[in-house]
Image 1 (cartoon, rainbow, N blue to C red):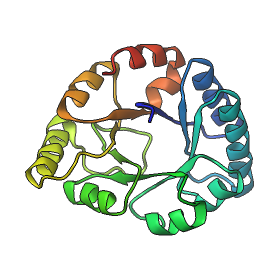
Image 2 (image 1 turned 45 degrees about the horizontal axis):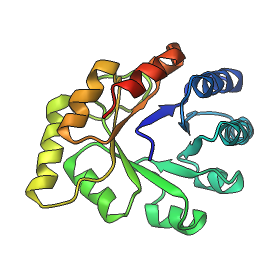
Image 3 (image 1 turned 90 degrees about the vertical axis):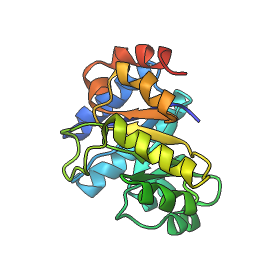
Length: 204
């Protein structure tokens, strides 16, 4: 599984597509299409475009929240928030070969996601971020360490956890040393798509 995910940004379909294209042009291999409050027909169009682009670039295309759209466009999978449909329900709709990721903010969230057999977990936020309207409590490095230590204390195998929430290049190594698998990045790649190469270089 790729260790660097790009979560798309933009207020219009044109902005979203441009940013996704820029990320793919600069070597991203995993795109999560995320467009909150989008008109449904435009969201479907964006997801269709994104799937075609990702296929052309041999990149993974994940749809945020919308399981039915993910199924209709044959996306590679879906990412589910804590209040979205259950992983079991998504698995029934998408089939066993699709990727299902889930959001978490606490140790109990992570354990829940492990029990649900998520393929990966998006855990955060690392620090304050403006890209999320309803921000969960900020974890910081100590929060990630506490959660990883909590899993070790319970002899639970560490799953593929991605840090999210204003992650910078210099954060990646400390996060991976704590036991975090990879990072999901939005703002910095949207603003500076050329940074993708630098982010990949610092990964273990």
